[in-house]
Length: 154
Image (cartoon, rainbow, N blue to C red):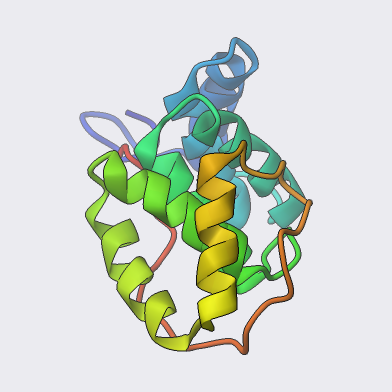
């Protein structure tokens, strides 16, 4: 409620406080939402490394929106080494979980990734994905995107 201002005044620092408590208890939606807040600097100082740590914790629990957000962080090198192969793998998992934005990003990445990179991504999907901060391959050149990092809770 503090995040969106539904019925009360919007208060990002208060929202971050409550998300932090739930995130520390291992709740994936709260981990993802707090990670997004760190990425955007809403109610907390902007910190892409902390954002990546939190979003990865939620992504590893299978939360599709967090998997898409982690793909985004890899795709743009925010808090993590720019890595299209790992981004593609996380987007694939998110898309399989029903995340529409991830499916859009997959289509864009397919257009610029080499066959070797696509094979590397397929290999990642057959194995556990790298932890945040670990790179799977050399990234391709950056591409513009309209996709923006979002949280499950609007």
